[in-house]
Image (cartoon, rainbow, N blue to C red; front, top):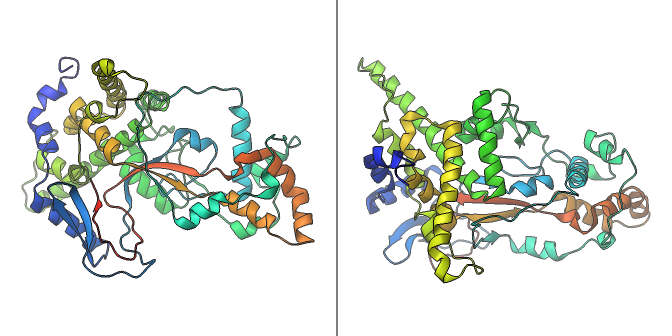
Length: 425
């Protein structure tokens, strides 16, 4: 494998430095600085030899009080879920309008009606779904008028009218959503709730992964091949691409700052070689996560016999290699060459396999139809003349959630008191 992917041999020193676990002092400083920046008090991160890093409370918190809020390091909406839910590609809130959400879903479902989808290869064996108890209760509530198992198509032109805003559903103004802001690179894949989210995503990773017309044609073609491979095999590769892209962009920002400081002191020295100290600093958020090679830590599927385990793990390793080569063709940067080694790629994916979560975001479409269902006469009767055909067209799938796979540096808590540590790795 090293002969096929020589970066592992050429950058052995850099790779070893990147994968070396941070010292307890470095871990303590990193999380202290992070919690300070978030304005958090009463909590701290401690290292435990048996369980790893844990978040501890050293004061009492009131029930419902927010203990910690930290943005996800990387996250991505599940590819198939994009058909059903239009959300911000950075913060994953629903965008557009109730009409657009419904019209787009009906249109996309019509397009995929006769398509078949293969199963993922080497998919994560375990996911954690985080949902407030109120969300759980609400998810069990069914709109009585949406119980039909058979979908009834809408008359011609209605779906288009929902999508272009010509048809306004009754009381939909009570469920207003942020307008959809298109990707500045023009890819047509990413949309946002605001320019601030669009700019944040562009600066953190999307500028390298955008497939819009503003991208170089060769790079765009390579990215499309990488995305297609990830969608057909395992979408965890999309998270890994974001992690590498965010590290590369942070490296460039830190290097620019370093060069600016050198110029002030007339010591500037422009180089195209990797500056390991800067790369390590850019890598720091990822360095804090517990890692193992993906092909070593992925759970053996139930349908794979233990006698075939070695063959299965080799297959997973080759799958990661195929993905890496496609990503390398698209966004390779000589200065960040160590990031494109199979060892680094495998450890990033393994980190996600061991630590990532699945998050569901409740659909405002469900809330809308529940609101209509709770109306009283005569408002309900008048509203359902318009909404009932739409609900019948959606069928039982009217309340599909947004599904996001993500990785946090920390996690969000809302507990009365943390008596036991919540493990970060």
